[in-house]
Amino acid sequence: MLGAALIVGVTPVEAKEIVYQAVPYVGMAKVYDFLHATNEVLTERGVQLPLSDQATTNTETRADKGREVQGQIIGADRVENLYASASEDQMHIQRYLSANCFGDHIARDGIDTPTRELLTLAICMVGTLLLPAALLAQQARGFAAQPELDLAITYTAQRGGVTSGSSFWAQGGSVEAWS
Image 1 (cartoon, helix red, strand yellow):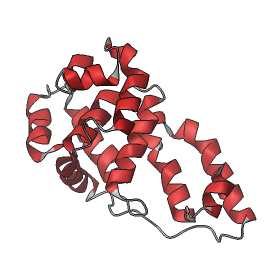
Image 2 (tube, one colour; image 1 turned 60 degrees about the horizontal axis):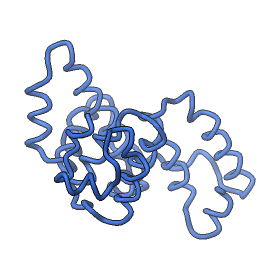
Image 3 (cartoon, helix red, strand yellow; image 1 turned 45 degrees about the vertical axis):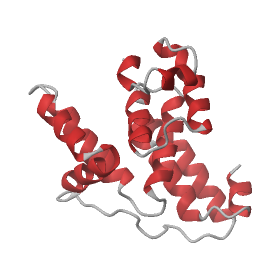
Image 4 (cartoon, one colour; image 1 turned 30 degrees about the vertical axis):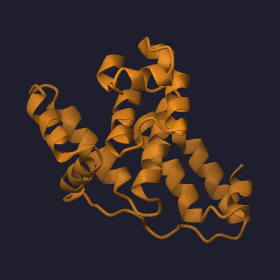
């Protein structure tokens, strides 16, 4: 499939970034083989590796940049509420989410933020527990009630006791109803 994607215009950087985007949601152990397969396809097609670095953060800036990007996506007020409502023994989860998911991954170059958000939604649909957060991000970006999102929600709705995507939006698009 990667070969076909490259033929129709997906760039080598985009191909690698799609793979990298899965890391915080499914883990490096599951991504490892796909990363090597991607590298193999790219080198077979004459692409010189390594590709240019797409990171926009480093260990000193990842947390602040991640929190900034997280705020741009779901709203700075929501991010502040997440931090304010986290207990001391849960604060590390908020910091990890901001620094790793948003600072290390969403903030990268190579693929725009809305595309990364849709990739995250697709990855989460595969079975992780992060679907409500991905839906919240999509809803905050104004993707509410679009056919693609309705299909995605319908696909996963029974996990949260909602019978269809349309039913989800009829309930006000409340991600909290899924928890």
